[in-house]
Image (cartoon, rainbow, N blue to C red):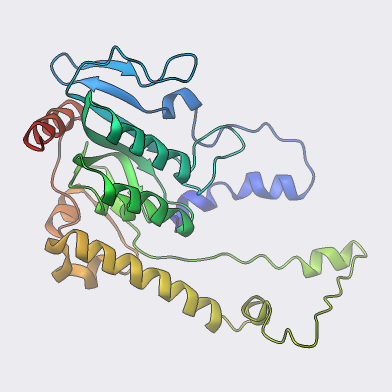
Length: 281
């Protein structure tokens, strides 16, 4: 569940790795410190790190502060090799914010092309259990899996009229390396137990050009995706035929379709979250 244009922009890097060429790897989602959650005092807009150098919660965060959870780059279920947090760790951050007496609400700061479908429920289930309001601010893009997450927020805003949301859908890309391996003199033999007639059948059929089994799996995920958005944002249900096909939308059209709640700056969303946090008590 990822925006295809973002994924294909990384194909040169993937091809270079497959060819055995040396590469200069760049962290996919930037510096880890940028992705760490932080808190903002809505009265002064001062930022506070959520954790000290020893990894323990900081005690000097003012009461009524807003917790901010940055979600940038591709979303995976588990942590990445460059230190970027996965959905499980981010869900842990949300749970920690929910327990803290000095955090009144949470803002998810989104700039993501999407990610692994299996990462969705890890975060949305945690969001559903939150006893504090969770808002989303899109600062760039919230596509595919990112859209799944923002739909679970109490309110979703975009920082600019050129920000985009959508890509409600799913796809897989299957690379067939048979020809390349055979050119290198490598022929693979797959030997299955006689009882395992259906093991890897969808994969093997897809290699032969029959995608029906894979498409059935994808349809299952997309149905759940669409129904989740319609349930969480009832105002979008009537326009599902427009946004449920995988399109991306700029801010104005996204608001008309009921996918977002309008435009706000970071400071405005922090103030709105703080206000909702006070009402929540």
